[in-house]
Image 1 (tube, rainbow, N blue to C red):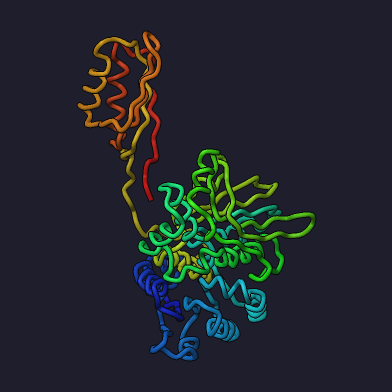
Image 2: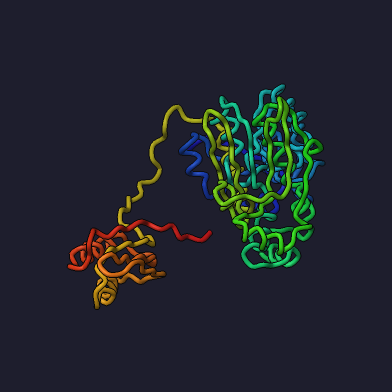
Length: 406
């Protein structure tokens, strides 16, 4: 059996509980990757556990308590005792990051915090590692899932702010007290952390001016739609005249902007640099299992890696014939019975049509349709049969449609 890697857990709320479950579920996989088997060696909460005992019996501390104190004191003491620390506490890092990173360096331990910004989106690791050599010019971020959900619902349904907020609370996307989210404070804390990493400059929450979404109305979203614009709460960190600007405020985006299509409770960050032009990272911004996944990723990074790629722990069957929706474009001569024959072929293969448009007349007619999800082998068979029809003027074009809803 691999040696145990002992994890002391501070806080076992929604995220802490999800993390403990994930450690148990993924222990075999982590052992295969790292050569060490993770286990929760102690838990600290209001009526359980002793901090000093947990630190003494752990190789790494995971802090998921939230808030500034006693989280700050516990993290400092754990690192001073030579323990690596993983935290998801954005307020702690935004207020006391420099102090914490200094202590980590002094004691030769790691302080990892991927889950503190943008949930499961790996923007911290990308900035610290993948783009460590890049000269970053600008970051734009949708880093608060609550406000993004509210604005998305206002745009989609015409709801007023208060109604969209109530829906977000009912679905668990907003806290009972959503003040930090809707005022922009939560996003400002996250942008302070990202700016510190991207621009190598100390940035605290007090350095970030922020504006929220409470004053926005359904009319704002309606007018924006008429102008081809979308409204998002955007965090920005950018070089300006030899200095650094970090801010959070609502902003309109044209449809071509990479953040314009980020809707619902999702987060996304664009990173701009001459070396890379622009990249966008996106994914779920909150939730117990998602945050727990990011925390476990940090734990694995702090563990001893193997010398080479490990032996596969699973041998999954590779699947070639998968289900997808399709766009189908057929050029035909407009004759009686054309639609009936196409419908018959699609029906034989069990394919149904979601939407349909006919363009042109006579010998230059075009039939364009979106098909409901079907096995690729069935679509391929239908295309072959349609291509053999006398009135079809060129081989039909089929393009996959990604129509998943998240």
